[in-house]
Image 1 (cartoon, rainbow, N blue to C red):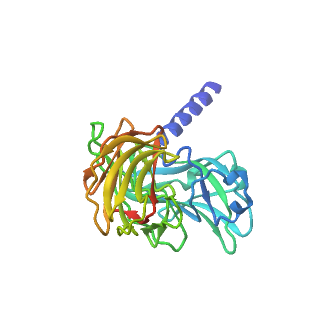
Image 2: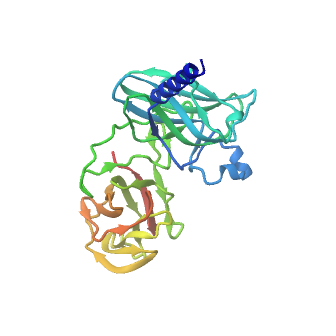
Image 3: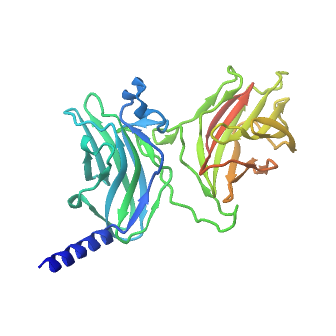
Length: 342
């Protein structure tokens, strides 16, 4: 009898492991703050070091190649409250996948078997949200994944998107083909760290009132990716103002990149910046014109970065360590408007 029980238990365990054979992580290592942000005002250490945006809804699009049963996992949770006025809910395509409660703090969450969803091949939306009539619950999560039995999943961009309940979703883009060479067929990175307004990336304006005017982190470039920005400079009309420059900087501290020196309203000279200092490494000035200019930064599969302006390369590459190279812009004596290219 015991052998039969043991064999049955082993079979059930095997079937359970096969039921969720694949896990697709949406984020690992990044902590997201979900809620209305009021708890962050307390300076609670729980919310320090989280992703810079806070919102009531965290949304990720994904594509499945076949019909399958799907569940959601969250590896780490902090700050989930059990309260009368709040609910922390997990959905896929409007189907409830579970509710978070305080007992799961520091232990994580997994969709109960009875709530696992049968999904068709195609595009789907995972949403984790904090709901409250007067005040939403603020909590932190890390390590969100989607589990399947056999289906292959690819994540859509931009994502994850953090937004309010009434805000529309931005347009989602399917993954692009991945090339084999170090620098060919790079995948475009669309995850705009400044957030969204009415489904569109939030524009950025930098003013020359502060010298230098440095932008927040705009994007993070994994190896094998690139970003495309539109940049317009104003206040560079050749009035004789000294020290006008536009810099494209990479890395968490923005200490490496390319410096474009202005003269007479246009770019006249370029130098490479390494470890926070200008170097003798120069490059020909790109053709910068009034209105929007296309700025692209490419990160090859060996981690090296290169940049171009209106299709013209900016000379030597720079190297930035880490899984993701942060991109920011800086203006000296210039007003700059920045947005993702279409």
